[in-house]
Length: 329
Image (cartoon, rainbow, N blue to C red):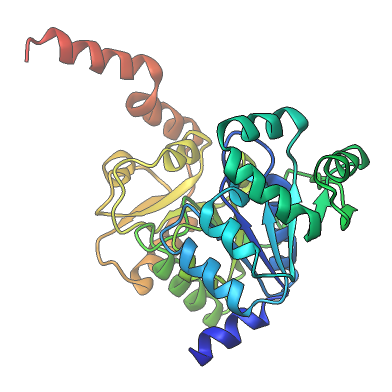
């Protein structure tokens, strides 16, 4: 319990949400701010209430964390969040919800709306505009509103260091996707003084893996991995199993080298391609060796693209699909 208390009390901010990476945009500013602080080395925690450990993290944060920001009504209206907020006076609620949305909540969940109304009178409320602050003040009598606006990413296209060799993985950051192997390989490369930089693009899948290792650059969830793949020297699929990840196919279509484990479907696609390697011993030592081999070999970009079209081109896909229906099986 002491370890949990120390860890949660050390977070400068805890951000709580229930709609991260959804189609709407209400989660983006808090997520970008979280990533900004994390990259600066500020101790922060992002709690996704839909994740397996989300509710446990929420309870620990309520008990021990000094600064909690609950993002959006999608999180606030959940019973365990709403009830917890009545006992946590150091929290803030960052709202993006319009009058139309509030009317809808009032009609569909009147009792919950009543409790939220009481809560917003006394709690610290962060607003995205002066107009919204006036709305909450008029509608709920909110006395502690602060307009903090939103965040926009000034340059959404990442620029990787030109003097480094860039090893890129794309996918949810979790154990099945091979986070431990990816980190071990990056540590081994650093020990040997290789001028390599390891990048992981994808949202946090296993929450207990945060904070991620300092030997890799974690970019979090991105709208697209295209800009990372374009600048990659090697796509390193560290997954312990993976049926046929699209990111690997996309990297190959861009003419990028790829190194993958034999237990993945990608291994059958890139077998025999120059500049690509498959490792059968799932270890950092062999993965590093295969990365070095791939980098030492010229990649035939045109051949790689044509090869991938045979596997992943839309016409080839259509042909296999129609053939499967036509064979009467």
